[in-house]
Length: 335
Image 1 (cartoon, rainbow, N blue to C red):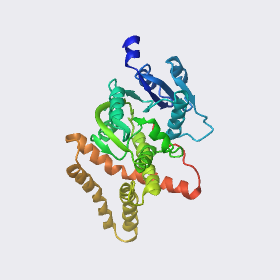
Image 2 (cartoon, helix red, strand yellow):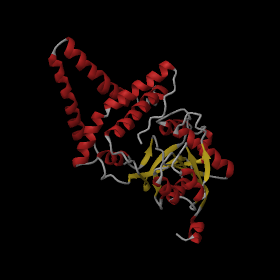
Image 3 (tube, rainbow, N blue to C red):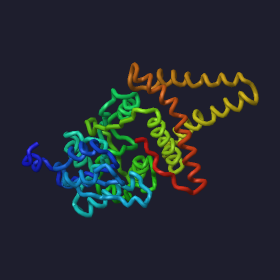
Image 4 (cartoon, rainbow, N blue to C red):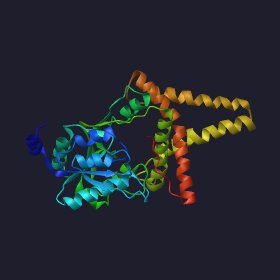
């Protein structure tokens, strides 16, 4: 795109807030996909040591370097970026949040902008996030499947989303202290204030999960379990019942049943070990009954959804340990 064309197509009431830490080449792709296309690009850095700060400045981004003596969360970074954007441009109507490992599709910003302008009751819009290299590992492929959200009105959004600036301000932004699950928590408050969240049938971002090891999958899934536990604690009461079912499932399959099998086989009868057959049966049930991909993808999803109960249960235990000891849980990172 030429400078003249970029200027003509620039969305002057939109800012992009990108957050990252040591994303390297991924961050370069992210920032280059949005610089010059909106009124302002704010990059929020969380203690990078790989040259990310210098890169963002070379590309002309407004930089916010977080004070790393304070606990870091993605929610805190997004809030800091939004505050800087609105301080510099109080007339902004929309803020596009994007993670630093994501490249924004060329068509997304004008598509989301036009949609939100036409739908004043919608606070946030997001589209299809795709994985850049689903062929590299089964874990990357599972991420690509996970992000395939049917278009329409939804309860929650993810980290990549265009938000109405006044809606974000009215509910007080993201909750800084959440280490995971901050987007659904924000969406609960937005919906409680009368707004809706919409998933559009449009490409949005290309994400680079770079999950190639089982240990990375374990950490990411454990973080999910932590989010389930905290989310159900905060909003588990009716009518929201936020992540109550997910929490109960993780606890039952990942904690209670293993304890029953181990204790029962030692204290009662070795035949209780046969209860372990419930796990392959659960995999088969998920394969046959859960809608979604077909063939090998469906099988891998059923396998890792079942295996995922174990790291999710560990995430639950971490959450309750942090509550009982009044110690803040550090960020759970997988890369």
